[in-house]
Image 1 (cartoon, rainbow, N blue to C red):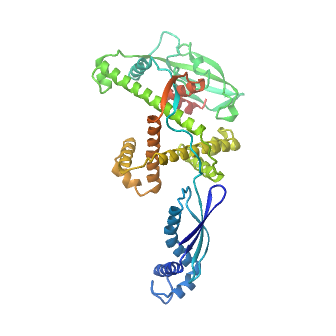
Image 2: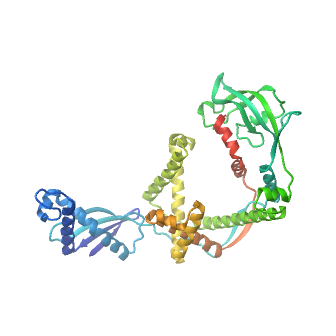
Length: 461
């Protein structure tokens, strides 16, 4: 086989291959015989029709396509290997000239990874930002444990407090009209953990049992229901019950009853170990991010638009799948991201970051000869099986024949090895930095109870 290679813009490579006539004719004859095995031709048993009859029956083009399907994978793989092409797309057949008794001329197009010089990635001295150590983490965890094992008692002799749980009826109106989903009877709300619109739960504080009153609130400007965005609303309230949470005494008896531990000291030791592990994990993640940011900032890569477009489609498909699984509406989701134009820009920027990160990981793994062995795959399978509550054997049985799964598994191993390499081959100084206000708010929202999330879904208010 003879091959000529032409490099075009955007990392497109054209391979012009010449396959000897004898091999091309042999593949054509074999293809004609294969086709005759499964097509019905009047007057002939399957597999017995002459080639000329098969050609008239199914057409020369179909036989040529069958022959090309047999020939090309081997020759294309050979051409890519000989020319040391690092491909990112499946080779595409763009043209061919297939004539009996003549060499087969084939043109293949393939896209390769962008060539670039990576910036410094080892021997660096970097600063990694971490949040200040939470001195009250253990006490907070113990308090959460007590809260989870607390009891509720009815309150009859005082107004409601911001730590109470209240049961109430409510009926909401906006601009003189009833709010859809804005009314309920016998609704329970934890005033300390409310995801209602701002000001709602706060106005339920300080009221007596059986009291009827009205509260005024304003819906957020970015509320999911456009009709209510930024609008004033009024809710008529009837307070049916007030309950206070009573925490139990922290002692060995409670610990034995509620956990796998026997003493308070054992419980505290386990919690502290978890807190320490979480902090070490946070430090490592920050170090990895600092190293990667330094590498990305010092590395220039000209990413072809075709790669960006493919990655954008992949990210968008992931979003659509998740939205569909959650029963959401895709159009509403896009609108919530700022509309189609803004969302498209966001996807494009995300795609560029993902591609650049992937290229850098691939580059480091090759520079440092970080490879994937059978032990690596077995270890990763074990981790996955534990996460999914199954066994490695069941995972292999279900996904082992799926090339995408195997490739993903291998890429996860390479990613881990590159991260380990960056940690081991760079020096890090950990600097405590207070989280930004937005980050604090995000964490606070994540800590909100599932009960509070259900409250918002039920009332939409």
